[in-house]
Image (cartoon, rainbow, N blue to C red; front, side, top):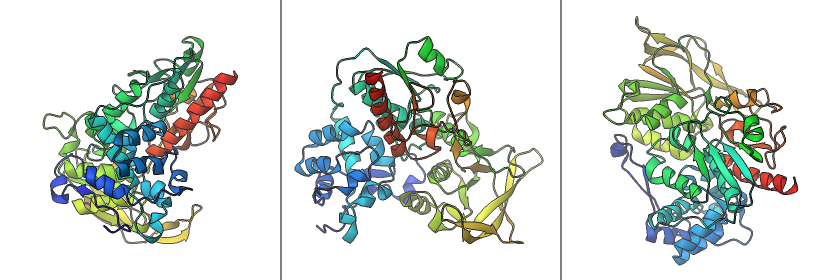
Length: 461
């Protein structure tokens, strides 16, 4: 065994997986997990923990994997994370825990994410649940949104003894985990639904089809329903567009809509009535993880797919693993290219996208080099659908129907950084509703911090 190299993880063959929605990564088996865990040197001052937004005791759980005590490993994991099987699959470990791993200085870092996934999957297969909660303390907390921030906050508060009710706008709980991330990256029934059941096993109640701001307001939850505190983790589901000609044509989707239709309306089933599978040539505009998810979904639904991104490959914001998988599967990358117009046929349906070539100029405020158009370099790509993946912002409904809740110019709720306290007493917020679109694990970190803040607030009230 070469201790400087990761134990390879098994994956579906690219040609096979490009035609199905089964999970791409097959994960470690028992022997592979124990071998990978044995590479960990169990640092006393573990940098990996500092890189984890929910501060999992990473050396602790990996040590138990090394010893073959997977139940104990799960107990350690679930002390800090409400969704370990999710995090093991979708967290950007390369820039967080694994990015800080000491092993990575002279070799490859420990596969922390794959080990987390193995432990969580093993616990699920063996019917193991998170540790029991404290006795109820008589205090009621409402959590708005059942995505990663809301589920984490709810789970932590339930463990502290609070009576927690989660309100979800859609018919199915899970937020972005169910509508936004494709099945081939995050299986819904086998993984997400089971993780949500684990949170419910702590005593958390989830009410679906409740649109806060319409069905009931935040103020009414406090004044009429008797909730002692509220956490807003409603995410950022309002899509952004470019404002170019033709953007309102038939066949133009936001990535949110496209992925929701695929995930919740099961576009991949032969009997599905949602029309997105009819497109045979698709352009995805954007270069983030959501763009990769939309592109790889369109490919599996039978389309030739172009990813159009205005910067170079080095600036692609998507995870390296996602870009690598997309290329393996046959997705075409049109880099240093930007749309200027969407063209339609006589019936108003998309039939081409006109783009212009770009070059990188001076760095912008973030330090990234700004893309500049090259005059006279326009060309057209034949497409019958365009998916815009340009980021999202929070829906203003909650803020606009809540007295005294401050927002900023990006429509995000203003919340204190450490514990998520908002301008309204007893109301906390975190995740994408505060930061704008970000990662699952950062939302979980915000939910965990807010649970501490709510606990402190109610104990000192």
